[in-house]
Every structure is written in structure tokens, then in C-alpha cells.
Length: 132
Image 1 (cartoon, rainbow, N blue to C red):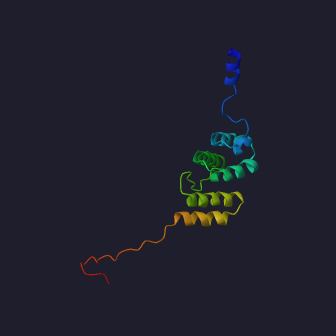
Image 2: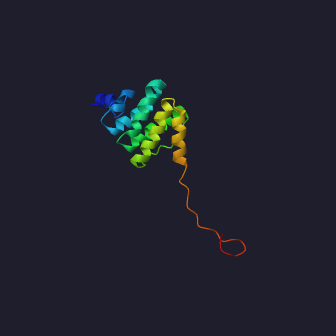
Image 3: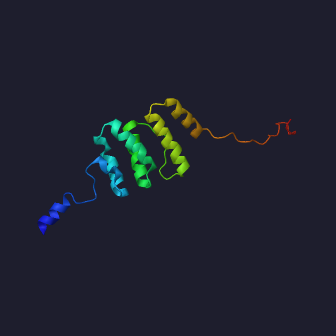
């Protein structure tokens, strides 16, 4: 009985032992497998992590985004809990960067940060009269 307890204590937990568990049905396993990407070359890990930005589970999306930022030192404004359209736009910026299309990344980044012009009300003139 004691032997069984010791054996389980050293490896029966919900801990993936390989990055391939990134495709596991359980979100907890996928999220934990993200951290194992450091054992993989960039060419293998980065596309998989970018793909996980579309995961159904927000914790998996968070883990993938944090690992991408740590690994690449880039941040394309991905927010794991944002609405699907916003997440999709940020994931597109990651894909554009990954495929080496800096113009697409720059255009997407500009559209993300540029707000539409606000309509302004006419300001009164300093002399107290009405605007021209």
C-alpha cells in the first residue's frame, strides 16, 4: 500500500510529460503542455502555440499567448478573454509575423491602434462670439 502511494506521488498526476499533449482533450493538460514547448525548436513550437490562441478554453489561450511573448519577445495585443473578433485579429497578427509578412503585421497593428476620428463640436471663439 505504501509502495503504491509512493509510485503515484511521483507521476500519476495530471501533468503532461510531452509537448504533444497540447492536443489532449482536457484543457488542463493542454494548458500545462504549453510550458513544455521550451523543449521544442521554434519552428515546431511557435506554429502550434499560435494555433492554440484559438483554443476553446481561455486558460489555454492565456498560456499560449504568454509562452509566445516569452519566447519571441513580441506582443500583438492578444487578450485571451476578449470577444472572438478581437482575438481573431490579434491571432492574425501573430500568423502574419510568423510567416514573415511584416507589412501585414504593421497594417494590422495600425488598424488595432488607430481609432476612427471623433467628431468634434465647434468651439466658441476666445472673444466670446460664435464660431465662424
